[in-house]
View 1 (tube, rainbow, N blue to C red):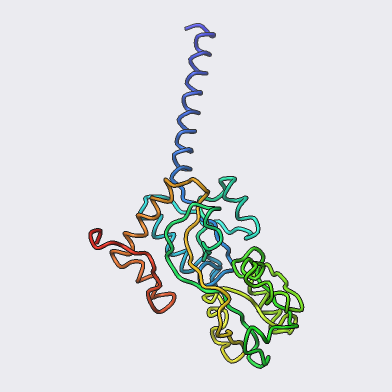
View 2: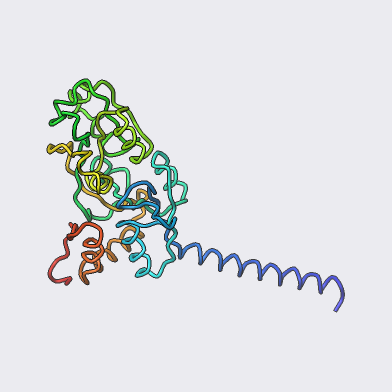
Length: 267
């Protein structure tokens, strides 16, 4: 065999090896289910004492990925950058107490899996009992959150105008520190997160009885990605039917929060 012929065969061989490696990497990448979430949003997604990610939505996503035969990748994201993360392909979905209402046309959604409400949290000794008492007060909400979007809407224009100022925060841990220090007078936030943050501190903070808005949570995908949405939706329904959804729910909330309806002929 002459040198040129040997070199040609070697080049072809290396090209095939590289192609096979590339296919294997692509297959592995295609088998990964990357979930974007806010790591400071307990009890839905947060960092536990051991430095790992945990929460209701985290457990739900992990179980879903396992049933779909995919390797899950939990990807913390800056909530302000969630749309960029999704459109760039860095994440496959947003699964983290993600409010559907007002965003119906921006994402491809699963059906709602949980009801939620946005509420105001104040210090117990603040004297603030109703939304009217927030007049002249400093109110904060997480940037690009459902609570902030609601307060910026026409329905709440008068209420917002009554505030001294509507501020934004990057995370609710900071918001509670600001509330405790007196830097703000109220936090607008998800009721589930509020209850989690207030555990063991019920005498320090209270939730105003009247909610801002009532809404639903869903898993959000890039607009048009119906294939992956359908796969996740079918898996969630399977988890409802075999009781897994209820089991995970009861662990985190003490009751079954599921709002996914499964028809009798599917049970």
